[in-house]
Image 1 (cartoon, one colour):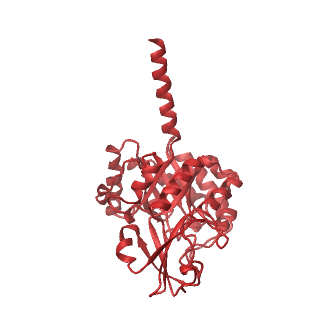
Image 2 (cartoon, rainbow, N blue to C red; image 1 turned 90 degrees about the horizontal axis):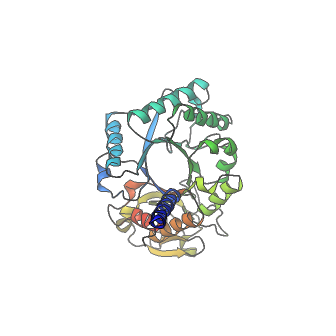
Image 3 (cartoon, rainbow, N blue to C red; image 1 turned 120 degrees about the horizontal axis):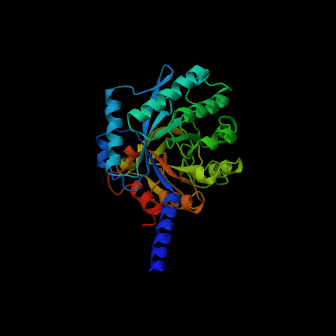
Length: 358
């Protein structure tokens, strides 16, 4: 009898440990509190509501619609007890005054206090900082200064001071050397952060004059930037693997005026538009599809219209999810849920692979 009880207890603790160490699935989400009901959130660990912005020195719910949306998203926790809901500051083009506000002690303190209030008022679980970017140029025309790096550190310190114990604090990191080397004091910040969300997408950006894999898993001779490159760079500078979250893209990028050499890959071109995963089939008619066995990434080329398409698909998302497990990472995240199909989309592939249900 005692042996049976001991066996049950050991099995229980092992299952708890497995659950604790299970990589997280993290979804950025820009929709409202109604549309979220149309997605199956089984297996999703975090939803990051994107985005809130600064109003003066404080984090602000911009309007009543945003307030209702956040409440609706938080309400999903009733059906998914393990789900955490975070708010997010910024985004591309959404942090115009961040450098100025966070350049003062008063600004950083006001922001941290207001963030803690919003988290508590809405029964949320934390904040993700998506400041693009501290100390280096980001969105055209936005202010940045060298002091941003130290100001970001102090901002994190103050957030930890005012947020409740157990609240989640994360930030989005650019997937390129200039960010790694200049934006963050990794040694001081990471002990206070639950995880860093590596934006291993847009690695070939809208400003690029050449095509490539915007969200490739591995580097190639022609393209250094990749998810694996970013992960290893962070590990090399001391960021623990268990705090790194790999990024996937639920959208693709189309480039125009691209020659047919190498089926458009690594050729000159100009960014034309983005396409959400749910619209891939409709908007990629006329394309031929290819697979890069080195980058572990799909791409496509429309010879008649000289268009090149770079994206994630089910195969690449499955491989990224497998990579996360094999390398002991904190998890995998993606931008963003509204781009996915309501059923049988990329999220399902991601959740199944993370949970070993393929």
